[in-house]
Amino acid sequence: MKNNPDQAWQEQRLSMEQGRHKATPGGPIPHRKWVQMDPALRLFEHLLRLSGLHGRGRANALNIGLKPLALTLPNLPAAFDGYRILHISDPHLDLLPELGQRIAALLSGVSADLVLLGGDYRDGHHEPPAAGLALLRPILDAVDTRDGCFAILGNHDPAAAVPLLEDMGVQVLLNQTVSIERDKDVLHLTGLDDVHAFYTDAALSALNEPFLGCRIAAVHSAEAADLAAAAGIDLYLCGHTHGGQIRLPWGHAPVKNLSRCREYQHGLWRHEQMTGYTSAGAGVSCIPIRYNCPPEVTLITLHRPGSTLANPESP
Image (tube, rainbow, N blue to C red):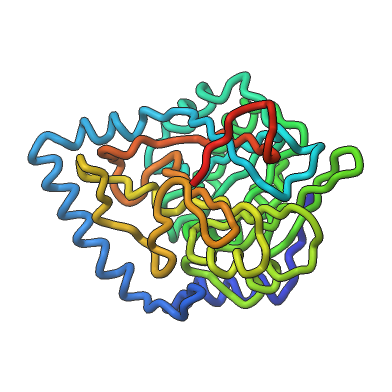
């Protein structure tokens, strides 16, 4: 399905991509934040190579697993009890090109009602996106889905990625909502443009649209969690942080990479009445390594309270 984003969105997104300032729900972020970070990352990677730990970290990054997650949503319609969402976030496929085939092998034969791509399909910011996005094709071909594949953009994804994703049969949600029907029941999925670097008021407007019933928000990062909860969202699915990517043995992540809602950096959480999940991500960013933070693709099964189908987890 072709999205045909409106001219206002395209102009604003391109202006932010080409400019020297980005924006989150908390306000503008100067370009120097990214410029200052890069030399430190390069030095850290060099030290890892000297220490002999780089190879181990790379092997960790390729050791991807399928994580099952059962969630109870009080507002879930009866027809959606047992509904399965395959959440693939942050693959950054060009940084570890063999990762795409590993994910495809992992997902071969997996069936889901809906596939949700959570953004950051490539690692670079300045190269044309076609080569990185082409690595998604084997992953999409591996999965059997009833209601199709939906995607949002991350902070690494330019506006030019939208038609490329659509050419692969993916519907991109740009501050938009789709309603999925089962019998006479409806489940609403709202997908936002990236809120870590490209936030605009259109994202808030999309959250506040008056849809009745159970609502899921797909957002690249947790940085709009409070806004979504205030809008009555039932489930917030995000990624971006990679769970820290490098965590100390006791679980602490030195780098959170969130400007707000930083307590929701990893795993299952709750904000007021809203359930949230921050994926550890499928790939890696900047440096192709992981420590104490395995990569994941998440298979989420939704349940109503008192469901006899499974024993859902709680945040």
